[in-house]
Structures are given as C-alpha cells and as structure tokens.
Amino acid sequence: MTERNLGTDYWDQTLASFFENGSGDPWRVFCDQLHLRLIADWIGDSKVGLALKTDLFDESAGTGLVAALALNAREVHAIDFSCAVVAQAATKNPGGHFVTADVRCLPYEDNSFDLVVSNSTLDHFPSNADIVSSVEELYRVLKPGGRLLVTFDNMANPILALRHALPFAFLNRLGLVPYYVGESVTPAGLQRLLSQCGFKTEHTAAIMHAPRTMVVPVCHILRGRSPQVLRRLLRLMAAFELFGRWPTRNLTAYYTAALAIKPQTRPE
Image (cartoon, rainbow, N blue to C red; front, top):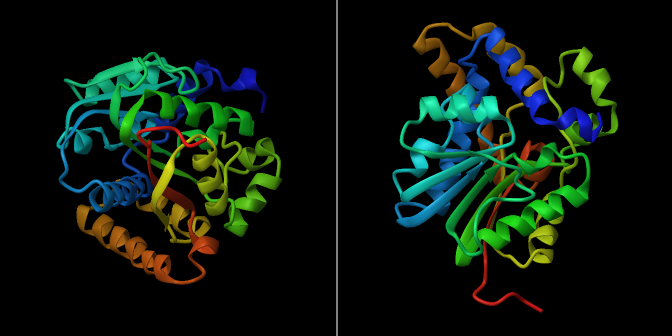
C-alpha cells in the first residue's frame, strides 16, 4: 500500500463497497457504543463551544458520534479525506458543519476548538511521521484548556501486532482486513506521542475486548436479523469489556484510548 493508494478515490471506493455488502453491521454499532461510553465517562454533560470530529466513515456507514457530540457542543464541525464519505455523513446529519479535509493540514485557525474527538482516524497512515503531524495539527486547532479524545489500534495486542507484521494485500485478499490500516501505537506509545506534541494526558483506557476474529464473522452472518437477536449479540460483545479491568487489559484490547488536555502554555 503506497501513499498514492490512500487518496480520496480509495476511501470513496471503500465506502461504496461497504454499501454493496450491506450496511447495519452490528460490529460497527458496537464500536459506536464503546466510543459513546468514553465520551459519557470522560466528557459527561459538560457543555463545550466548538467540537471537531475527525473521520466521518462511522457517520456515513452507520450512526457515528456527531449526533451525540451535538448534545454537548454549540457547534460540531467534522472532516474527512473522502468527498463521498463527507457527502453521505452530511446527508445523514443535517445541520452539521462538514468539510473535506486532511487531518494533517486542517482548514481551521489556531485555538478554534474546545474539544476534538478522533476515534481510530490516525491509524490509517503509512508512517509515524503522518501520525505526529496529525496530532500536532489537533494541538494547534485546540484552544488552551481544550481536550482531545483519541483512540488508536492497540499495537500491544498480539493479534494486531501480527496483523501489522503481515502484508496488507495478503490480509485483504483473505477478507481479514476490509480496508487499509497503517501505523499505530501501544498504550505507552500513545502517552509518549501526546506528551511529545505538548498534551497532558488525563485519562487512558483499553477498550473493545471481544475476540474480533470470532465475533466479526458472526456479526456479518446476523446482519439484518431481528432487533432482539442483535441486542443479544451486542450484550454478548459488551460482556467482554470486563477484561478492561484486568491487569492484562492492554493485551486483549483492540483500541487504546486517551483523554488529553492542551495546557495553557506548551511545556518546554
């Protein structure tokens, strides 16, 4: 996978393929639920002025987080690299401020936002330099005292580490990885990254412990079934989140998450 393959056309086609295979995937619903729980736990009912959401694939292919963020924020702005993804998300979320943009070069002034939510956005780049430049951009557009809620694929999970070590094209042909995933971080690496870019980490979490290789095929089989069946499946997947309390949580979690604050002055 090269930088050329990661252009907007690639993600436009990925979205089209997703809808060809049918929407309403319980796994995507479950992902949204976990991130909504993080927002509830870490942001709560506190009101913010302007919020920014990066990556709109969840909003275009499922429910996503924008509608929930709008309950706390005076305005929610959202960006994605794909024109098709932005258009679909805007159709499903009327009244939002949606822009086609690259998170590595955001079209916003310094100190614009009170809150940025970036869920599994920055782990689709082919290099660590892209991740660093993205986090620095998020730092730039946040106001002093503003918060960043971010999640990454967890490279401390042995399954994800193995996936990362194998060629993407091979995994994609087998149907194990539906779209490109790039560089990512361990939980400790995430805290180092945030500190390097000037943030102060307030909270961390390890989320999504359901065994993906087993559960995702079941989700595909049960897609479109009755609401009762889907609720039972979601409860089953949620039960695995108990592993998030265990000392081994960083080995079983698929996502590493953090809430960080932009200090009033950048540390030297």
